Amino acid sequence: MATACQEPPPLIQDLKVTVHDTSLVFPSGHIPREPFFLSNIDKVLNFDVQTIHFFPAHPEFHPDRVAEALRAALAKILVHYEFLSGRLKLDAATGRLEIDSNSEGVGFTVASSECCLDDIGDLVFPNPAFERLVTKSLDSLPPDNQPLCIIQVTSFACGGFAMGTSTNHATFDGLSFKMFLQNLAALAADKPLVVDPCNDRRLLAARSPPCVSFPHPELLKLDVPKGQDSSRPIVFNDASEDLDFKIFKLSPNDIACLKERAAKDASGPGSSYPKARVTSFNVVTAHIWRCKALSSCADIDDGSSKSRASTLLYAVDIRPRLEPPLPRGYAGNAVLTAYATATPGELEEWPLGRLVEMVTEGAGRMTDDYARSAIDWGEVNVGFPHGEVLVSSWWRLGFADVEYPWGRPRYSCPLVYHRKDIILLFPDMITAASQNGGDGVSVLVALPGPEMAKFQSLFHKLLAGDHH
Image (cartoon, rainbow, N blue to C red):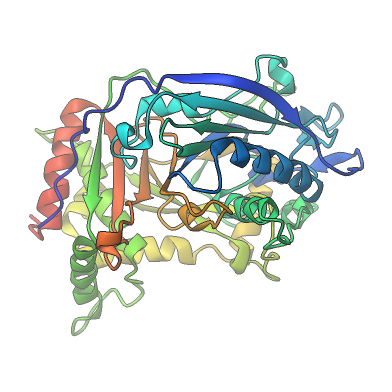
């Protein structure tokens, strides 16, 4: 039934990458130098995110030509995204993180690998060696003067290539980054922008005075002494625990079965879960939440590990939920964290339809009022989202749908870091053989060994419908 979890394929250990050139690209036109306001959502996301886009060889676009086209397109696009060529700084008077739009440029690296694209193996399987395909910082610049975006083009021996990007999360969320890539691809093809970016982050400014009108159990308040730099949140406690990591694949058929089961729970005669929205994301997230909460319960339970609270977190795009909605081209972070809380005991007992209803309700809570309250919370407090597990979905962002002059990527993926409180969803490779079945999902889980064994067994047992 379920696609078994994937053991790592033999991963190539060394991509044999040589860096040939690293430089700065500057905007091709004038950008007024002024402080650029960051919203309370942007400012807690002051860390870098890396993505890699793999392309097969193209007869008209040798990787050198691709690098030239990208460099030229970057210089042009920086005029439209005036914040991107600036630098992060703290405003001394307010202590707020902002961007100095000083046009000091973004990074651009050209590299080559002795490998062929086909030597790398399964692109879906996160490979630590992919680190070499991304430039995370420029050695020529001091740590406090790093670009907000660095792009690396690495050519492979077969003529294929990878575009690795490192961007500070304060600049983009997944949706606005996809729009940035669509615009970059359009400029590289000498076409007009696909979407005009809206750079006004004040659309998500806190109200004055701030009004926190809801409880926010999804947010954890930090006690930061006044004057201490809180611009680098300790969002991620990188405990140096030994973690196993595995990929669990859900085929379109697996997802259809989960949906069918949840729909039966939700719409049966006298159903008590009328609010459940049975979507692929909701059923997969409910399934993962149950497995994660139960995998961390003690084997011999005195009842305490099943009666604690387990909080699930997941991102919700607030663009269409605000009144008025944000412009389609809003270029900053417009996602907030929705939550659902239950005890492992309840998660074990309840049918899937009830869990799907809880995930539905978490997103449904995200109204204009609630979103504004969460933003105002960030004005009054220093803190960040906090729960037992965050489901971070790259599944439907569609990075692989971006049409460059040299075609679409064969695959696009995040450069993965393993954290036991973050579970990543990302798309499966869409191959010609599975045109209709391209909507499966890969679930990346990192857990200590004993918990992983439990998670794996629960994942398959619950997928097969064996609830107890």
